[in-house]
Length: 462
Image (cartoon, rainbow, N blue to C red; front, side, top):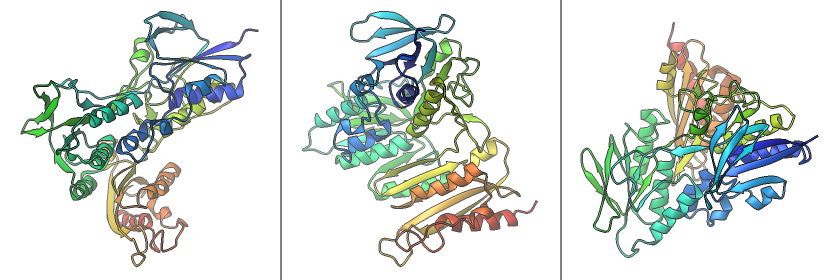
């Protein structure tokens, strides 16, 4: 009997995790695997790019988990610099174009995995494509930015403008600061880090100012201006212009689902491919999708959302590969956990913000506490702020946000587990968390926040 053929579109976290897991379960005599990747790299950490640009990670190749040669050694026919341009669902084939030669051809499939990732938001502004304007979505983007920085005269004051104040924006602001740039962050929102509530985002703003990063809120960019050499020179907003030798775009990403949409696959309200619990594309028995191109179920809100994270992509790949290879796996959903940092400031969130709770019709209470990440008398104790959101009357935990110094962010994992388990804030107060003065006050800040939130629930009445 001829082997079945699995075709994988996308050679990063989700796609090649799926291919690798399927190969573990089925050998090449049972399953032929053909994977297409349009770039020059596979299986790399896009989340690590800001830290490579900053110099914290010394070499680009440190971000690569597995090379094309390593994948091919496992009997995966990986075709680099080859872009899939069309999916013929009825004919069970895909059209691919070799980006080097321009040659196009069709490849049939018995099973298909779509892992096309996400694309950076790049608004149609005048000057957006000028030399010196950079995104940071791929390794190639990171290398282009570093090359651009190297070309600037190090003997004079250098100015960087970062457009956007989300995770990528604040991480790239730190990277530019480490390169010795005067850094301005232009943020169209009320406060940086829109994944937090504005009161917590204000703490991030204050800390960034303290680090020497100028953050301008309510600043919608209208144009990128260039000098006589055609290179970026200023960034214009409705109110004023900001000098810039380099511009970094950190506006966010959108699911790269155009191929799937054109093929008739279902997409959700956020533009991502819709799947079932087994990561199959809705309505298609032999097509799976995973990674940044899909929408996932928010277990707290009960709605789908788009979250571009390597953690989810790798899990999707494992589930898909298990199902393709004859095993079984499901991906039940997420609670929306994320962490980041800018210099020594750590930022974390999980679950719902206040506006998320309102959007799904939940009544809620909040509590915010100030504590330290270690016992207050222990050397190195520094402040951290924890905000907790719980459902009115029931006390079910809905969300947690943390802003603090070293040792603060990963405390959000306790809240992520509590959210996944559907715990109430009162149940959280009894959690047996680890304690020693170098690691925590005797009452961990998350538990202090839970106690205060319990009081808010009881005081809210009916």
